Image (cartoon, rainbow, N blue to C red; front, side, top):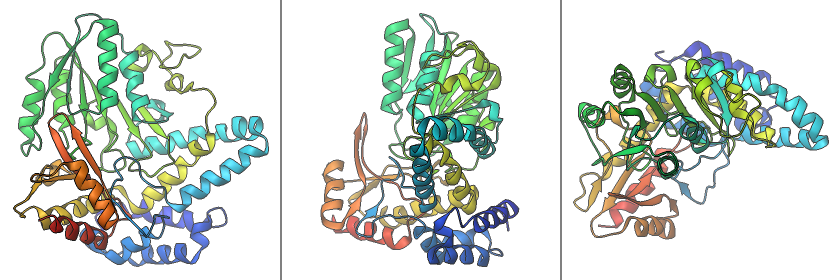
Length: 428
């Protein structure tokens, strides 16, 4: 097979052997999934991606409602049963004696979680901080960077609102200059995107903020290429990886960035309120932590984890989410999500009243796709999809974007998307 079969099989063996601690895998549904995983050992990647019987077994590993079709996984994804079970188990343990079992026992398990995330990100564990979401990760960098009045930051109006607001606050407080790009999306030409960013660089540019996958329409930005040019000019690179970590197959250091933040409760399907921050080792010392640490100028990545009391049950269950992710495999997951997006888009893109707002270039799109309908407001369309068809999407109206966003996940099967396709055609 073309994907990481050895790692895949080791994970399966591990999960099967741990069934006493993971009730799902000792259930009939769990056993059927393990049997199905074993049966596809000889499949090629494309065969696995299109094997609906396999993805039905993955669907049964979740507790998603059968009454609706949830196509808004871009906001937050549900957790598979093994992750839910882990949260419940760790939470019960914590409540037996919180200061002992939560602060001492569970907190001692943080380093293995850090190692798991580093392995998934292809980086050093000494560059990974565990926190609550992308906003917290990126605001740590935005507010912690020692910039001075007149320094320029390049960013776009299509970036995530929390990040935009953080940069505006930074500008108001410190006098930095924000240079706004206004992207007309979608863009099919990668070089056009590179030129748009790099043409905004000047001798005063100190940071470029890049959203790896723009959450409104799914446009993937060429971070690696923009980052390389930025570094040649002494510009630091901050990447919003909320929608690419655990969705696309890449190693964080290969992106030519200095800082990277992600929410683990999106495409990793980790517990709600889990995230991570990656900081290039030599950059750690100069960044002030968002929450004060004993040594604010330390070069230890752990200085960014002084959050006070929080649920260590959800933090520990990140481990089960990583295991479940590896059970499928990043390469398979990326290919399947891209397949699902193409599946529904290709079925409606030629309808006269439908406009697709996501790239058609397969290298520039992943699980997020967006559309609009002539003469209709996107939020009204999204409301009607739920009211009449019980399909949950989200209507977005932001800057120059007015779309319905569709975000399937690994538990989505093509029958779910057939309902969406039929519903969209009904608007004609």
